[in-house]
Image (cartoon, rainbow, N blue to C red):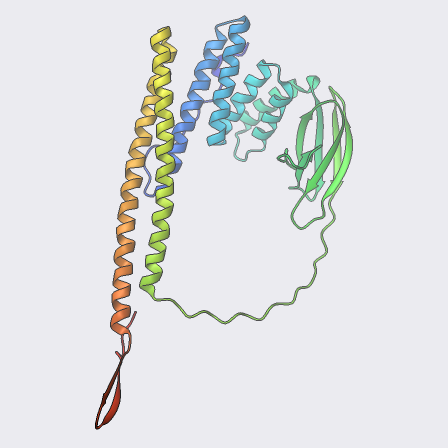
Amino acid sequence: MPAFSSLLLIALLGLAAPSLAGAQATTENAEARVYFEEGNRLYEEASDTEGPRRTTLLQRSLEAYVDSLQIVRSRNALFNAAIVLGELERYHESFNYFSEYLAIEGLTEADRAEANRRRDELRAKVAVLEVVSDPTGALVFVDRKDLAPRGQTPIELAILEGEHSLFFEREGFAPAELRSAAVRGETTRVEVVLEPVPVVPTVEPEPAPMPEARPRLRNAAIGTAAATLATAATALGVSLRARTLRDDANQASAQYRMTGDAADLQRAEDLADRTDRFNIAADVLWGTTIALGVSALVLYGVHRKRQKRGAPEVGVSVSRDGGYASLKMAFGARP
């Protein structure tokens, strides 16, 4: 059984961001890190046990790594998930996780060599297709195009033994399809040449007349209102996530009171900490929403005031001596 030290440690950014997008990314990284560390803890615990208990802990460790990958596709979580899948004898998935890991740019020579060694140890247990295309970078679908692609060429895929249909797609080239047989314990090379799509000359349409520019203040009011709606939607999502985490924390606390297990206590505390972070983020977002909404109202009010001040005034007067009309208009006014 491999020692726990073989698992990599993840490094995530701290909670310091100058913008809303940066704060959201930091929150996602922090949540992914919690799941990653939970997977490491469960894997270490599994290393000290045997039998059904070990299998259960490995499955829980894998679930934690997958939860982390759904938030941030980190290379460390990919590597560790591949190791756990191998120990669970899910060799095809383990091989493909290592393939995804090896496709990451910036790996050190030592990391790449270790991943290649582990993946090569699985070759005798799986059927592998080495898929290449000319040009490279084509999406590869196996058997069904309504499912997500399995990756981009060049790629090595571990699949079930037997005949398979491969579909290829790349922008600017005609789709391609071929069949290939996969044999357990062997690596079969599959090559495809993609044909470029003929370029059809197009007639440039006449440019449409430019619409009259809207006043700057009204544009600013509209933009601020849109930002208000976007911020409110984000705040609502964060608030709902905080409520879900609070319910999970309450359940974990109840579980701890029933079992007295230190692991359940740690999970309850982690969930409570995450709930607090999400509540703080929600408060900041709701405050930002209110500020943006007030700004939008002020901008629109100033725009309407200027619009009324600059509008022409027409007057008509009729008497026994005759009638006259007057037109009053401001010159040089700027919206």
